[in-house]
Structures are given as structure tokens and as C-alpha cells.
Image (cartoon, rainbow, N blue to C red):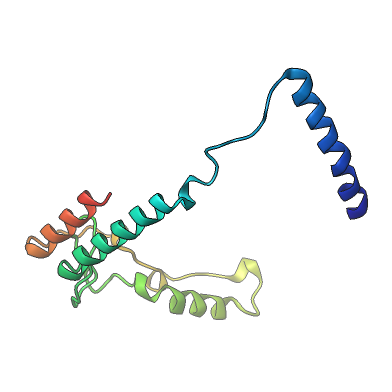
Length: 140
């Protein structure tokens, strides 16, 4: 099958060439691979250096002791366990092993709780939030 397809491509090329000749068209593109031009590569290198320099002075991910939404600044309480999703998932799977589907039951205390699923009123209003806001609005 591969041989037929490969050998058929020669005939297809001839057909395309004759159609171009008949219609007096050239189906070529001069703007192909614009991203690999030297000027574009140099500009990309300069942009990467600027971004690296800005991130060196403005760490968007500081070390804090709570789970916080980068977008809104909402801080999660001890209920939030989304960082343990793999452990919780493996635990749920191990509890299902050997049971029929109709006998599988999940408990509410064993579920995954995300920042989006809770109503937290604690909002970070410090320079940290300002830095994050500046970062994501200027590079979005």
C-alpha cells in the first residue's frame, strides 16, 4: 500500500504542474517559515532576555505558606486539598478495587476541594498582589 501511494505521488505532481500551467498560476509561497528568519530569531532572543531580566527582579511566585489564587488573590483555607489530587485519586481507586460498580460509594470527606469550589473571603492586599497584577497585565 505504501509503495502504491509513493509511486502515485509522482503522477499527482505531474497533474498539479499541468493544472498550474493551464490556469497560468504558480502555487508557491514566499512568506513561508517567517519565524525562522534571522531578524525574527534575534527579536525573540531580545524579548526572552527582557522577560528574564524582569522576572529576576519581580518574582511572580514567592514562597508563601498558604494556597493562593494568582489571578484573584483569594487564599484557601485548610479545606483546600487540590495539591493532593494524585494521592486522593489513588486512594479512591484503591477503595474501588474488587467491588462491583453498584457497590461503589464515595464519602464527602474524601473528595477533592479546589479554590474555586469554596467561598473564601480572605484576600491578599499587599505588594505581592500588585506585583502579580502588574506581571499578568503587562505580559498578557
